[in-house]
Length: 233
Image: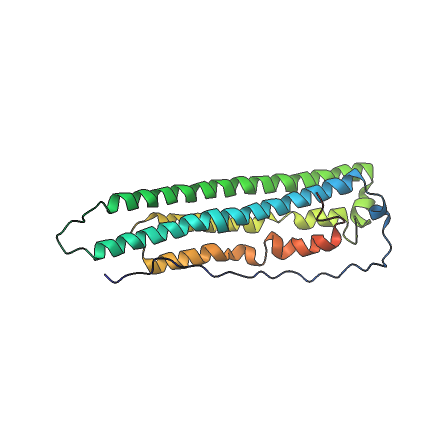
């Protein structure tokens, strides 16, 4: 059996962000921006929570999950290479298979933990979207439907437009976690080839469903322009 590479790194995938119009210093503030209300503060806080959840998602996938996946593949490679060096019919001088299998099983458990945390993250995203919708209903009662539909919340987007647009934010994350779940299932088999493992790792890193539709691609630049004090806590 020829030696397989012991480690490799998946490609970094750049994300495209929408080009937003810069805010002009001389643009007069709208009445909404001049005197923020509880509605403005709640909307900003909920949007910032979505951003935090998306960043936590990337940490789970690209740090914890990727480390476990690479360690799993590297350990299998090391075991294959060690067994390939043995003279046929001979036994190794020290235990090889047992310790390597223990490491691999630990990595699989870590990947399952990552998937569980991603599902929890998704549920929290859904809760935030629900809270934004509830905020819009609350504003309709206190400010009126016309205000929600037509009045710019800060720069140009109304609360209704914001809530309707952000409502689908969880969809690409649902698709992404389904993809990752399938990749983990493929990695569970200790007979998976190195070439297949490399393809799996690359897909894990790329997160194709988020490349154009994740938070950073769709919302970060827009919120930086549309939301007053976006980077404040």
